[in-house]
Amino acid sequence: MAARRAERRRGAGRNAGTDRAGAAAVTRRHVHFDCEGDTLVGTLDEAQNTSGLLIVSGGNEIRAGAFAGQAELAQKTAAEGFPVFRFDRRGIGDSEGQSRDLRERAVDISAAEKAFMRECPWIRSMVVYGNCDAASALMLMRDRRHHVLVLANPWPYESDQAPEMPSPKAIRERYADRLSRPSGWRRLLRGDVDFGRLAKGLRSALGQDRKPRTFVSEMAESLDECALPHVILLSGNDRTATAFAEEWDDRPGTVKTCDGAGHSFAEPHARAWLREQLLEMLRR
Image 1: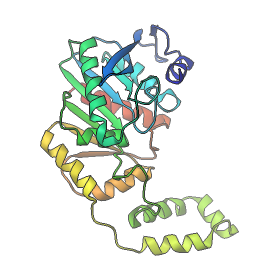
Image 2 (image 1 turned 90 degrees about the vertical axis):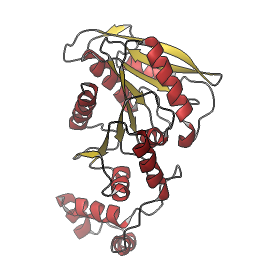
Image 3 (image 1 turned 120 degrees about the vertical axis):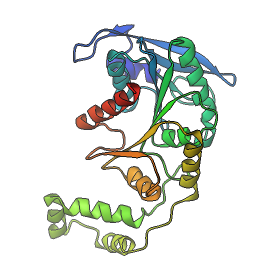
Image 4 (image 1 turned 30 degrees about the vertical axis):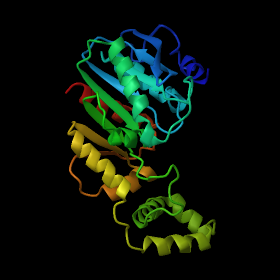
């Protein structure tokens, strides 16, 4: 299937593998588990540390991740001694069932947590990592078996679709970024710009910033109630992260930003940064 093919392309479909840095071999195997009558499929990278990492995919992304980025992240984390479990939620990748709204994904996550603990019963601390709407789903969860949350670029909108027009702050930051580059000025001077769209954007940039949405406030309240150690990771070059940061404002908690990172931390420096943040939480 699609998820397994993506892993095999990176050599992850084998029972064991070694990362490029020459770390010790990591055993990788597929796990089937139940979620309300549907069979879900996960992948376990085995290791013996009592801290383990559960990766929750965002959107419609399969457990291998974009360009198998999550498969690579799992392998390298397991090579450091920490078991890693990732899975396809219902209706995605190799798993049965119908895809659910982010408010209904707690059941899938809880089923994956149980499967992880069943396969690695020696785990005493579970770190759960989610990006985008997976982070939002984790923040909204009430029934939790995990112990530490790593929340990347949480999706700040109630709907699956972002507003057509970004916030004034997001627009200002986008223009500032473009005008800081020589290519941006060259496009402007050559006339390779839609001036009608530019004028509309400038008018919006001069507008008043919106107050925090109720959805973000709800996520914040749920996170406060669970009182679990957590960290929020933001990509410096991502609209979702910018929109979330604007609405999160000065709420308490640790927020870290990776400059120049895109939404999925696909850049080499961003991949390394994300891995270090996860290892830091796993070693706590």
